[in-house]
Length: 122
Image (tube, rainbow, N blue to C red):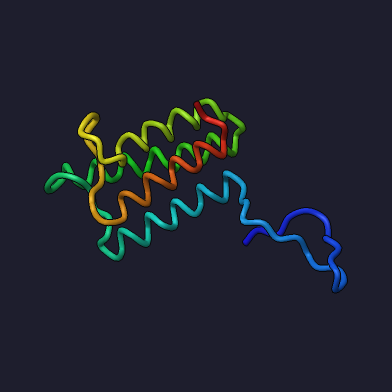
């Protein structure tokens, strides 16, 4: 939980205001952590066979990390495009083909879309 803002008054005194709102950079870090965990647990794998699966998985990871660099640099439009490309490779739709498969793919796609929403992407 991200602690934000001033101390709020309530009937028992003061307590810090808490919110579930996190910054886009924190959301991106959560996506990277989720992806790493899902990969290590085997609930997310590269789509395809052999080197093709590894290459597609690596390409998706690069897209996500590049989006983080663009967010940090303040290049939000470019980050939105990187995230859209990553989302389209995790959304379960046949075109373009997904880069990942497994039970965590749906959650990864949702997390990417949530980040896009937080950034105000179209």
